Image (cartoon, rainbow, N blue to C red; front, top):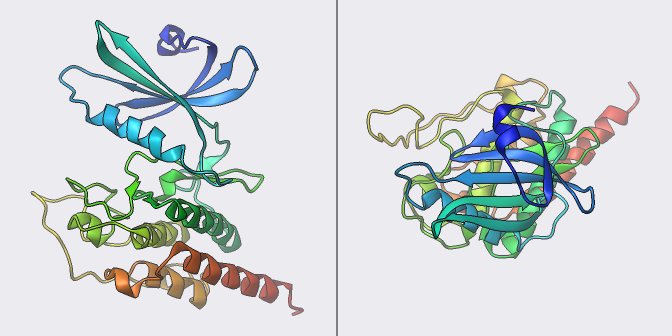
Length: 282
């Protein structure tokens, strides 16, 4: 047990393991004392001079995520506020423990495995959109896949109602949609773009160029982008799958698949076609 782990005390739980960290947060594996059930804890801690932005984001994450009920969406159980001298010092989000690893840290090497993972993601996004929300940060690091085939979408810190215009640019540069960069209303097609960019990276190991480059002196937006087709970078990618990915990352939302359900239907057909070809006699 690490020194920081030894000092962490969560009433009603045994702290088992540190799992990782994010912006102002750490993730832990816990066991509930009463039931023995395992769960994950996101601990958000105020640092000197911090405003409430990270707390607001965590509270938003909990409020949004508890509106969903889908096997490929991480469940959130409880939120606790830790105060000292009447000031909010920490937030604890108790969440479903998701076995497996992210597509970012363990990129699937098999095309069919990748397609199956993203089929589950498309189905989960259709559910999220049916509840009138946008995830707004789909990327390989937010897709967890386990050896038993379980897939989970995680991290709803940037999620918002359909039609929201963000006060500032939010998103991950390698996967961000143009409407996120230009702070236009977000809808399900924004997730379709993020989905396509995430699938492109997972299939090829390379990120698409986006409107918001990672390294700039100030923000120099780029609109004239050339994207290689996925099959140019990975010859195992079928043309039909490459076309779907390219359609998803169209800069103009009107030219993308208009819903995650549309993406699901196309991807499901592609998977059936791939399986038939693999089962055909030589």
